[in-house]
Image (cartoon, rainbow, N blue to C red):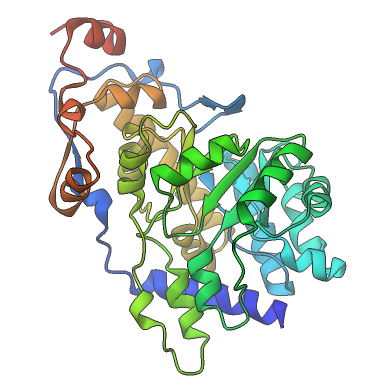
Length: 363
């Protein structure tokens, strides 16, 4: 049953990607164009550092799958693509491994094919501390993701219905494992209040996992006989909204959910993300074109992200937080309702000192 569910998730997620309208709230974020802000490409670095973690690039393949023969093959190809491009990668939920150790290879292939890369294990918030350590050990993981997904569980026919213990269990896991713990949503977003709580629980990083990409309420509803939870499709906050909401929370954040292209990566970095993850679009590329197509896509994204940094005058991904951005439409309304002052975002490069630090010159 678990293996079938994992295969269903892949099939339904890929179908969603092929049907996707393309619009999300990243389209409501735009850069102010400064015609003389550009720098030289050799001066640009894609390296990012956060919470004691160093990545060569700010892009990662986020959690997808594992637990069946078919998904093991997908993980193999994802790992090869990560190895060939230097992109960090996360496992899908490893709950299936805890219930059936015979499927361990569908997850450990991520490390076997990518022995020197940055690999993240992935568990749910009900896992024991012992199982968290097993997951890290199986993948020789560099970090541990704990996914939170109350909406998905609610719609999932066989999902959990008890959530009160999650915060306490996250705290126990964070104290028990020796690698950094990253708590991620699966597409419904983390609010500023949740991010602040995670910091107090000992979590090192929050992956905001907002609305805009794969909708797991829709996926699980597609597995229900009556499909009677359609009213929860589109639940939650967008990734762009979560990034704005989380500013000032003093916890490093990653951005995933609805990332469609290198410009979305740059937008997320400009709104404060230390790294940006994608999954559904990469899965579609892999299924449609194979591992060579995914490697080419990842290489193109990294090349174009460096080009955008060059154009914007950002020597590093972190420097994008000094670029001026404008917010529009419903995203601006969200900020107004949440008491977020958006005006400073449009004026961040205004001082001669800031411009000199970013570009090495003044206007």
